[in-house]
Amino acid sequence: MENILKKYMSLGFKQTLFTIIGNFLGTGLAAIAIILISRFLGPEKFGSFSVGFSLVLILIRINEIGLNTSILRFTPTMEKNSEKRNTYNYILSIKILISLCLVLIGNVFTVQISKLMNFSELNVIRLAFTLGLATTYYEHLLSVFQSLHKFTEAVIVNAIQGLFKLVSALSL
Image (cartoon, rainbow, N blue to C red; front, side):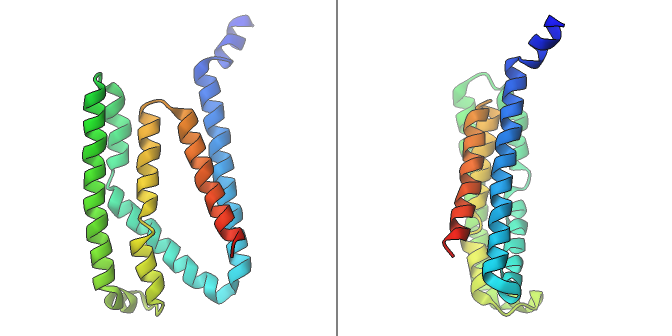
């Protein structure tokens, strides 16, 4: 019985439990923000918001192209901090380059994208391409913390992100 208790109270278990609770909190705050935004905007404007939000989610995946998975897969096994730092910087450089290309493409071809999507809100498209990619850098930071086994920092960043969304929604 004592071994079972020790097993469940291990550092790994505590970190896992903390991560689950923190991620649940961050996701819950973000969900509340979306609910509030839908109430404040009404059906038509929330539809525009949803299109922009969906576009942001697509752009994040394009910008990410599996690089966060690479961080989580390869950097924990690196022994030297300089190797880890170089890997983080290299991947971040790739993401910045992709982001700049996406912002340029999005702003140059806004009208064509609007026609393709049958969506007349050009500013929503520009905003999605320009500001929405900030989430890419948030996910990069989250992956770096996780690869360094700094789960407390990862949970705090996740909770701050959810709180930011909630405060933004409340400020509408």
